[in-house]
Length: 371
Image (cartoon, rainbow, N blue to C red; front, side, top):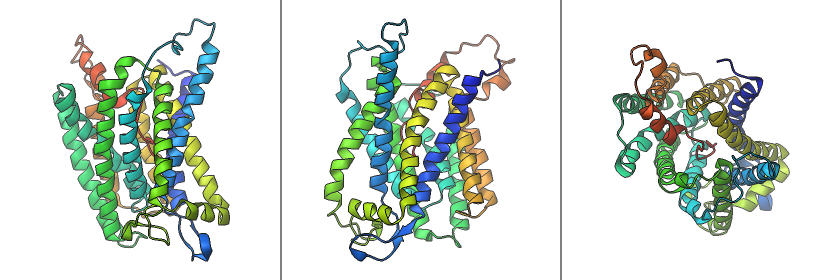
């Protein structure tokens, strides 16, 4: 069936805003400016403050939800149920996972390239699959296990490409290894978040925009408060500010004042995550969760191509191989191979497909499906 203009618009919006989200965060990291108290020029490395901005973008989804609810008042639109009871504290554990995973990924983004960052996030398939078996009692079919194995192989190839291509880059080898490991670690936390949402949140049938916005509210408030102790906690080599602390929000604002383009990058990150979540939810509703996964894979290609065009990273052929293997792993796990085998499996029940789509390709993609 041909897509309507509205569906094409939603697909394009998801692809564009998802790409802007990662690229704007990396763009901010590439700026160099003076900080507070006459400190020398240094890179804008404020991952926790950037994570606060990301949650602010998610929090704005609540405004979109209430706008939709006002529009639905007096109409027969049941997609926004204003009377549906739910306990907002249900979203606190997933929000804490989202906050931790997002912060780790922003730290890692300072240490590695935007394309590798996006590719390595595919590791979430591995941990989500394993956790769904262990804690949700699911049974993975053969294609899903093959998808997990392919994803592992793809991660190895991407990691190898990072090690070989960073010898002439702005990042040290130790930073690249640390950054890649932090991204993998963050995917474990994201997988825990997805399992928590599946087990405790989805059964309440809360509107997706309300779920995203509520988690964003928790993440924004908690992480904003944590910026205060982070201002005093020493971080050694992990610190990117002159004071050597875990985060120096005042230094970030001083840098923004001296280099206004940083504010443009931060606003791009905040606004893009809001539109990306809205577009992703709408794509799942109007098209399918599988289409959302395909568009998310295309986002990696866009980020990689633009990073090369902007000179942010050097070309390495192994990255192509790694991305293709990761793409195969994603396709196998999410059942994208089924249409090719449709004639052989005619009449087969679709229960397995709908079950696997819900966990990884449902109405909610955590982090920035981050940035």
